[in-house]
Length: 299
Image (tube, rainbow, N blue to C red; front, top):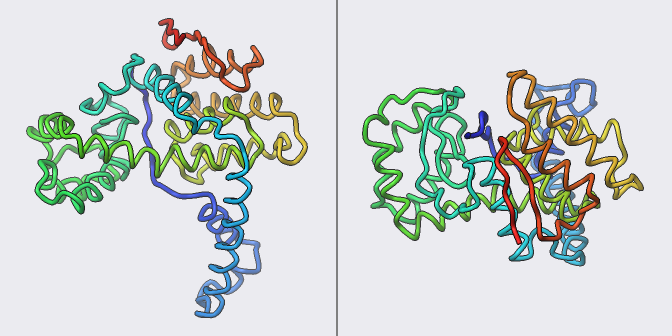
C-alpha cells in the first residue's frame, strides 16, 4: 500500500518563522502592505536571521547525533519505506514510479517525490544542472507545465520508463539522497533537536515532513507543529517529551483522516505510537512494528 499524499514545497524553519511573522494580518509589519522593506531593513532582518541560525547551529552541534547517526539514519529510511513502499529495502525504491490516484500525479523515488507537488520538478532541475545530458532533462518543460496538477500531459508514455532507467545511474540515486536530506531529513532532525526531542521524536518529525510536506498550512508539517505547540509545551520549554509527542501524533492522525476518514493510519497507530508507549524514545533496536497489517522487524 502506498501513501495517499505527497509533499508540497520546501522551506526551512527560519523561512517559516519569517513567513508566519509577515503574513499575520494583525502584525504591525503588515500595516502598510504597499510599502516594501528598505534595503537596510532587509539587511538587518537577514543579519538577525543569520545570527539566530548560527546560534541554533551551535546548540545542535553540541547535541548527540540522534537520528543523524549512520545506523539510526538507516533505520529511519527502513521505517519510512515500510509505510511508503511496504518494504524495508528502501534502496530498491529509487526507480519506483506510479500514479496512486491521490491527485498528485506521479509519485516516484525514495520519499515519494511527486510531479504535482513541485518537489520532483526541483529534483530533476537540480540533477540536470549537474548532469545536463541525463535521460529526464527532456521532460523538464512538461514537468513545469503539470506542476501543481495531477496531469500526465507531456509525460506519457515515456516518463515512467525514463525515470526507472535513470534510477540505475549512481548519480541520480545520489541526487535523490541529497534532495531527501536537504528538504526533509536534515531540517526535520535539526528542528526536533532544537525542540528538545530525542531520536524517536526526530523520526516522528521526519516522517511527518515526508508525509505532510514542509509547508505552513494547517495540515503541513510546520502547521501541525504549531497546532501541537498550542496544546503542549515543547521539551525545550520544560514540557514532557512523551506528552508533547502524543499530542503531535494525535494531530497528525487527525490531519491524515481529514480528507479521507477511511485512510489507514497504522504508520502512527501500530508503529510510532507503539514506540512512544513502550518508552523507546531513543529508538533502540531490536524493533518490531506493523504497517497496513504487515509486521516488520529490525534486529
